[in-house]
Each structure stands twice: as C-alpha cells, then as structure tokens.
Length: 107
Length: 121
Image 1 (spheres, chains in turn orange, cyan):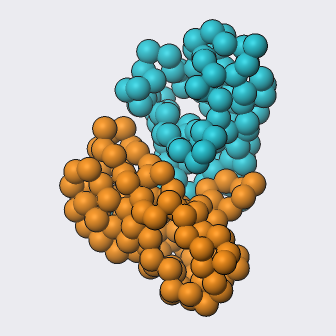
Image 2 (cartoon, rainbow over the protein chains, first blue to last red):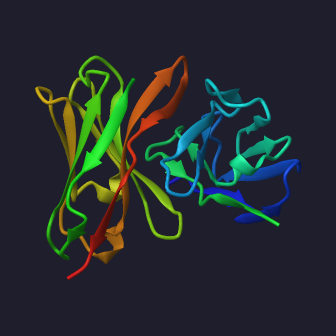
C-alpha cells in the first residue's frame, strides 16, 4: 500500500499565524492527493482536490501544493475556526490511503 | 441538498457481523458517482474500506476483502456495509461518503455524520 506520512502530528498555533503542514507519499502519486479538515464531533470536509485545487466555498487562505511524493497544505492567516485535524489522501493507487493527520491546537 | 445518514447498532460482539446502512437523500445512487464506506479508528487513523458504484459494481480495500460486503437497495436509495468476523480492532467511527470524479480528480464531497461502533463482549 501507499503510505502517506503527515508531519508534524500536531502543531500549537496562534490566530493569525501562517501554518504549513506536510504529507509525504511512499511512492509517486502524481497530483492525486486531496486534503480534508475534520473538526471535533464533525465529519471530514473536503478542502483541496488534485493537490492544489480549492473546493467550492473553501476560503482562499487554504492553499495546497506539491506533486510526486511531497505535498503541502498552507493556511495563510490562521483563524480560530480552523482548529481541526487535517488529513491528506492519495487516490492514485488502490487502496486509497490517508495520512495519519495533523492536529492544530491553540497555544 | 444531498445528505447521507448512517445507521446501525453501536455495539457488536466479537466474531459477529457488523451491519450498517447509509440512507441517501437529495440524489439517486444509481444516477452516478460511487458510494463509499470509510472508518476512523480511535487515535485518528482513517481507512477507506470500499465502494459500490452507481452501476452496482464494488471495489474493496484488499486488507478487508475476505470480510467485507457492500450492497444496495435501489428502491430505498440506501447502501449497506457488512463486515464479518469483527474483532476489537474494528472499533471505529464509520462514515459513508460520496466519491466524485471531477475531470481527472477524485474526492469525497458528501459525508454522513458518522456512527460509532464498538466491538466488545
């Protein structure tokens, strides 16, 4: 299976911070990566598809980038409502596999 | 508005079968898209389990292939998950989700709220 390794596993941040989290694939997955946000008690929500395409209604402070094996999700101006766990997902190889998540917490 | 809603028992005994239903409103599951099951384990790990397509074909995660079955009832616009021979390691929150192809990209765009299932005697 394709292993998706996310780093860091958690981050302590302040409102207004620029936040960068990473996802590394164990093999080349092209740009076949999505990013999801999951807040406590809610189901995951799609943020980014195809590595860099912002989904409908997603604020432009969320940016995805990368290709091949290395991917990044950046939040340019962290808001309190962005506190959540963020997951990457690759769909280039069956079975589709998720990263272990990056949890954002307030300092 | 498209909505998905999981239902089923919250407690299953080891070695028994786990059976869940996903009821879809706002879209007919035979009209398009693929319909998936995904689970989240305690500690945040997530696993794609499989899907049933709009035509009724299935695709399962090989790690579950001998235990999993996804079926549907088109008259009720529902699809189902059956996982056999469960162990405590199957304790998780189970989500159903719609899997969409948009140009050359795939994504899960609609999710149910999730149902927590505990495997315990």
